[in-house]
Amino acid sequence: MASSSAILSFDWLGLSARCAASLSELLAATPQRDQRVVETGTIGAGGDHTLLIDQQAEEIVFVELQKLFDQGARFTALSEERGTVDFGSDEAFVVIDPIDGSLNAKRGLPAFSISIAVSDGPTMADVGFGFVHDFASHEQWHAIRGEGAWLNGQALAPVAPERRSPDGRLEVVLVEGASPFNLAASTPALIAGAHRVRAFGSMAISCCQVAAGRADAMVSLWSCRPVDVAASQLVVREAGGEVAFPAAESPLALPLIGSDGISAVVAAPTAAALADALSFPAL
Image 1 (cartoon, rainbow, N blue to C red):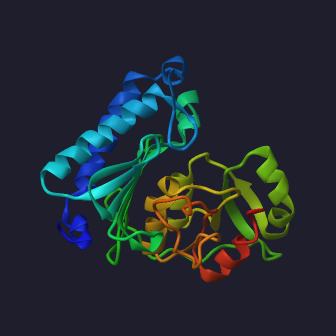
Image 2 (cartoon, rainbow, N blue to C red):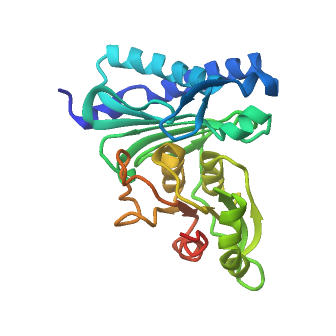
């Protein structure tokens, strides 16, 4: 069996870009809400009703993964709908959310993406490649561990420090998992530490905004799963930002596979901003 580190030698950027292009064609062919809300009648691994468009998007990715397996890649895939799928190794992992922000996608709201991460180890710290394509803005983010992060093929400069209001609060904070209950529970901390709050509805897209200096922090107000942010958290870190999963033993020790892989996620450009933002999720 090939070593787990060999998984990163394959052309993951090419594979991810092909998946994004094919999914763009699928979305263009099904532009109406009524076309996108059709359900398959099954429940996905994430516990939600699987939409036909989710299933079709996932099939696009798995066709590409099968081709890579045929070329010699060995890994375990973790996907939003299918859960874990054995491709010949339990030491390397491909973590996929074919449509992150699927509620937005099915209703025609603009923020949704495809997210693909590749890891040669079992935790967030081990992710070596991350890719996020925003279908509304057509922005394409990717990162390679130890080499940097890119937006539309241009290297991202080191992320600028956070901006703060005159009273010291973070100027713009992006929130996800923003149900009324989560917002209500987190409101006191957000009032104390955030000047303005924005919510996109896609964890991956929100996290990437931190890498570009567009937001001073991103927080999920409730627990997320590895498929949501495995790719985008690497983009932030490779741009020089900070990421933490509060439920893990250490900031990046969250498992990619298994029942322990559930946590809020907090991202920020600096350690000081991260420390402030860690108070926001009411977990």
